[in-house]
Length: 399
Image 1: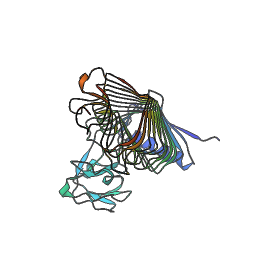
Image 2: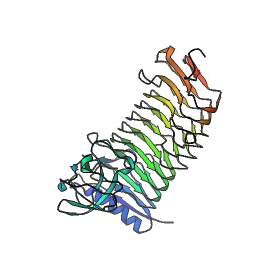
Image 3: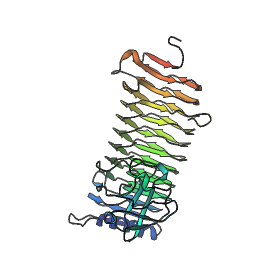
Image 4: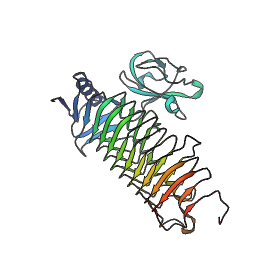
């Protein structure tokens, strides 16, 4: 079936905001015609506000040559409390925002996670900004409420059958940290049957790729590096995701973070190296997943971390196999290849290679299983340079 293709090119003398308008107009036009492809040409496109995808639209660039460069953040304190279910806010600096701007409404000091509101400004009236949706959670002046342009570079909300290919998303490191529940370099919410392939997200002050409450997401041959948050962050009831052949290195938090209720999914043939926290973290009701053939090395915490969850919320019925886990840990966190906490049970750890070369030899542990773990299968794992191949750390020394 022949579908429309629209190409967007950038002129060096384009005024601020033109790239956004051109790309968004092309996406909306293609969506109106029932779907098709928006191609972005070579060059660096200055992105002033989030690009919003629509169902049945493919957004693609030229491999290695199309850059979406995030602009510098603009912030205003709120001038009145932003109340739950309102569709407007009052700000001290209305000049910081234009009609059509995507903004985040949150506390200045810290995100409220899913309580943050990401909305588009649909009209301005004095210092009142009208929004395209209701506010998710009350933000009080007493809490230091703000509106900020620090949002996703590419976003999709409630979309289906979309593709994002061959784009370089370049963040702005001077912007404040964006919480991955509502924003990321590439962010999806409530979307299904999505392909993200051949994309790079770098230097975004937040998660590289985050998708929440999604199904059928395929992340293939992507790279998320030097981001302020997590490399990749699926969560909030995401099912049937595949993360393959991708690189998640040198991020400010975990390389791969399986958040709440990531289920029936596969993470394979990836690299997570040099992240500040864990190579891969898994936890709350993350069940029936397969984690295989990954390299998880030189991370500040652990190669793989099963988080501290009670029964029955732990990361149970997962299979971890054929991974290479090298030189993870630090003086503060200890030197442990795989750490399993909480009431985790029925996990299979098979044919993984766990090694240490640079850590203090007498302080290294291959697999550490804590007090309430049970029914763990350990089979054919290889331990190199581990003072203790396995360890139940609650037992008295020597037992």
